[in-house]
Amino acid sequence: MVYLVDDEDVVRDALGWLLRSRRLLSEGHASAEAFEAMLGRQTPPWPTSPSCLLLDVRMPGASGLALFERLSGRGLHGVLPVIFLTGHGDVPTAVAAVKRGAFDFVEKPFADNALVDRVELALAHSRTALEARHSGRWLQRCLAELTERECDVMRLVAEGLPNKRIADALDISVRTVEVHRARVFEKMDVKSAVELVNLLRQTDVASGG
Image 1 (cartoon, rainbow, N blue to C red):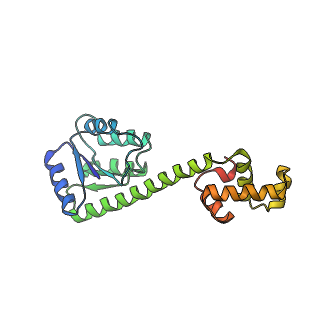
Image 2: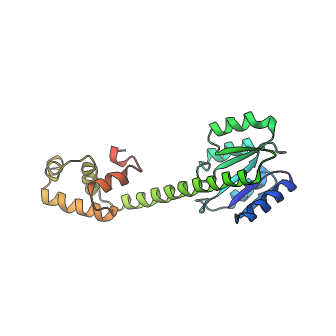
Image 3: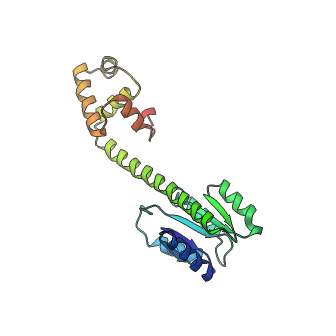
């Protein structure tokens, strides 16, 4: 979904038509306030599918920049990349926003194909961010299923310790370590210590965080 926030009806209509010509869905809002009202009706986590926001810099009421800052404050600018639509005089503002995490900016009047190409890049970025978010939540669910002792064994396995040293460190038998290790691998859906370490790199678990 491509969200369009611009106070000019003609701009939203033109953008909607352009996106439909490239088989992209869009939803228009005439102000930052209208977009935020829509956002307030959503159930977290949102969005659940790849999305981006085409956002006018200057609008009556809250500016596009103010909306972007509020979205950033909610941690949405990763899963909802923002592309600013800007007039020539607002280019420095848009550049500054990009430095603060906006995805890109496009100067009006814009080339249709170039704009849609950037939108498609933003949607790909959103898809990657959503997959990472989903993976992180799945990982947290897996970790929550581990017992305290399994967590101890997992951390030491991730540090590269062999079973004998893990047993000594935890004052348990090697056989008990083997049992816990097998359960950790099963619950985390990995087949080796290398896979486990790569999985844990998505969090600070491996470093004891």
